[in-house]
Amino acid sequence: MRALLARIRRPPWRAPALALAILAPIGIAYAIWSPGEDDRSGRHDRRLNGIWMQHGWLGDDAWFVENGKVDRMPELRDQARIAKMLHDLRSHGVTDLFPHLCPASDDGSIAPHDDAQIERFLDAAAAEQGSWTDPMRVLPWIGGRRESTAHVEDPAWRRAFVASARGLLEEHPRLAGVHANIEPWRDGDAAGLALLDELRAGLPPGKLLSVSGYPPPTIWHPFRDVHWQEPYFREVSRRCDQIAVMAYDTALRQEKIYRWLVASWTRDVIAWSEGADILIGVPTYDDSGTPWHVPRVENLENALLGIHAGLGLGGEVELPARYQGVAIYSDWETSEDEWRQLSWMLSARKPDYARQARVGFAAAFLACVGIGWGRSRRDRFQRLIGGAILLVLAGGAWLAGLESAGLEMAVLPAIIVGLGLIAGSSLSMLVARLRTPPGPA
Image 1 (cartoon, rainbow, N blue to C red):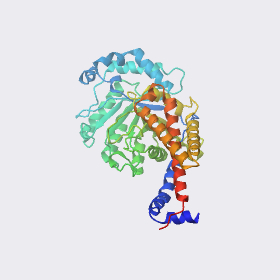
Image 2 (cartoon, rainbow, N blue to C red; image 1 turned 90 degrees about the vertical axis):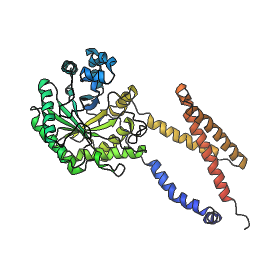
Image 3 (cartoon, one colour; image 1 turned 120 degrees about the vertical axis):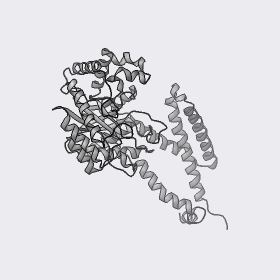
Image 4 (cartoon, one colour; image 1 turned 30 degrees about the vertical axis):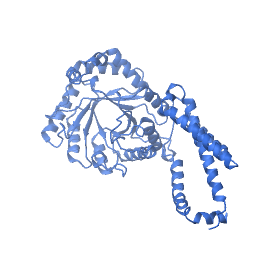
């Protein structure tokens, strides 16, 4: 052992050994760190979730023409199709619907809509009530982008916007309220608070004011336009009934950090709310190639793992009073696989096999490390070459997409075995080399 330590202390081993001593604990700690929580008990699902919905559900005919979607009009106007869609949403615990009616115009009026379609939509929502205690609430999603047509700083624009929203709710009294979404909405923005005050005062009595809100600031995404600090979040929460916090578009490249961030945001915004119910927005969209969204990181699974961790901190049994559920962005992007995943991870409709699989893969890897640990130089070299060949073949099959042709049950285990053999034989070679006494100087 003394000879081994003496060898490590001398060049060229000294610098790599020092780097390994520093980086190895960090790497091991990061590998062990599990910031998400896979809670499939169903205790975090109140069945009061929300969803942002596409424009075609309530928009007027001109929207279909202008956007080249005339072929979709029969589908989105069909009463049976609407009823089935709402039934499916209800089966997933979605009760608050935010159908898109943006952007508002330069003069403040909300986007044109189809009155007959709104009534069809509301008829289907009422029919879906059935024996459920909580109704399906339809809150049109109104607002726009500040650099375009949402002139929130202009009092005249705000008055017209409020009058237009009030007119919509008076014309269709079964609407539960409105969901306001102004982007960007800077922290500390007085005009945004003025808009909420005027909406609150101008909407018909009993109607809900919901808002698309921003999460707390973070060093991982230092952009003030899309984050609210605690004092401002509290100011917003005093002025509305519900905040759907958009917990995405972080530009993060690391899954674990995103899960940790969502957990932290979940705890913070619930604690900061002074009256508003909180929905945590989760992403199901795929904006690949954009700088603000990496689908591999920001997806439904990682967001739910973070939310579960945020709600489960400290082992609380009861959900926080202000936590309402999740809000899915969006209905036109959510796949059937993602709907199933939502049921498995939120509503406890499927046992958790992922954890057992991870344990099995880890055990297989360690076993292959042991197999790769050869006694002789020849054994070690043979196992290294064997692992490399297996890894190249499996990796090539993966890159070629052959796992989608029914070989996925073979490709992943082959990669794990190959990596284990390479790791075991490489470590064995390194130890053997370090144990070899140094030759004469």
